[in-house]
Length: 333
Image (cartoon, rainbow, N blue to C red; front, side, top):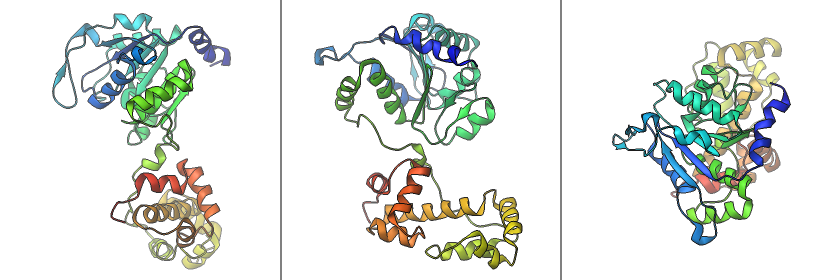
């Protein structure tokens, strides 16, 4: 896609201020995420000097929609408000169902005329079905990023971010990340002061550090390698020691190149990436479940120094060890 065509909707959108918001609800709509959109854009805060939005909850045909929680909601509008809304958002829905054609057409028209088009969590699958994620960075809940990438190979799916804006397409990760994405949009349209005031009113931070990589579950998996299981088990038992491709190859009685090829074929990762991942996993567990200092944790996990541990946390988790501990430390530790 030529660059000028990619940024043209953004230039058009910047010529006006966000005023009208249309949220599309489909069968299986997620209640929390819908509530976030209502809280961000459907609540009148003009008495506090904050912007007001014309808010419309829409559904194809304007018919009642059953939520994922089992009860039904009754949107007041069909898709008509979508055609002149400044923000069109689609919240999570039952992705086992194909989005109605009229919804896909409405999303495309919104994008083409320069409106913000936003998806929350698995709402990204509707944007993908509309062709709006092709050649764009995007995200969804970390549990569904692989499925989104497989369904729409032309999309540039980033599993690590809380949200990403590419042109006038804004996609967010799961659940609470909808708050982050919405505040980002308000910040872009009205400035940081307004976004901070809205965040304070919602009792949430105006900006969260890091991405969703820090929230991805990384349980310790049983080692089931055909020939390298003893080597991997030994390394996991001695993570505090120095390990390299060469030392691991010696344990396997292989040449380093042979070992590296065998390792990748049996684990799907390079020896270096696997080792860093295991060290990070162990460090995360210590940050969650112990009172050890960062220097001590870095040593026990085999990073050698706190600086090296911080480097890998920033690179792979987009956060710091201290911030991670503040978020995830067990109260019983």
